[in-house]
Length: 121
Image 1 (cartoon, rainbow, N blue to C red):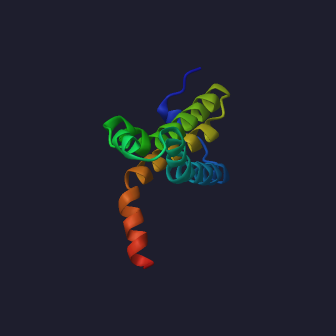
Image 2 (cartoon, helix red, strand yellow; image 1 turned 90 degrees about the horizontal axis):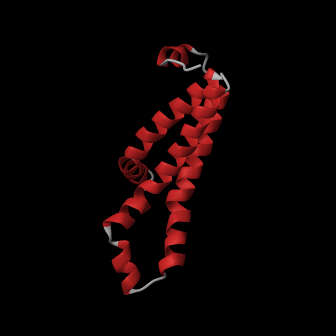
Image 3 (tube, rainbow, N blue to C red; image 1 turned 180 degrees about the vertical axis):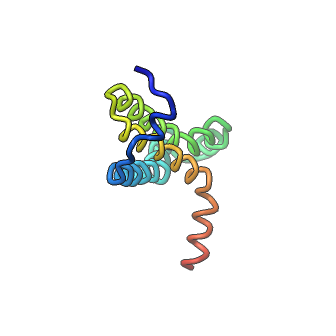
């Protein structure tokens, strides 16, 4: 049975599930953005002039900046689809809200980090 947005919005919100998913996805996205993607890039291309040239390509810039968000949104989309198929709309609502919050936080990550560094200097 396909659900309308009205059914999902009117379902009960499980706050503990929402907070757990938000923290887990935020930490995973941060880990991917800060540690894993630069480490994999360095292991594949190494260091030197050729790696620097490859790193400046627009495709590599896109992968380095947006791949953590794409991976997290794919996971959240899968969780949303799985929970709507199981008729668990409260968990599906949590996945939907977390994906919206993550998208907003990821788009504003540079101003948030600049604010944190200027306040705690």
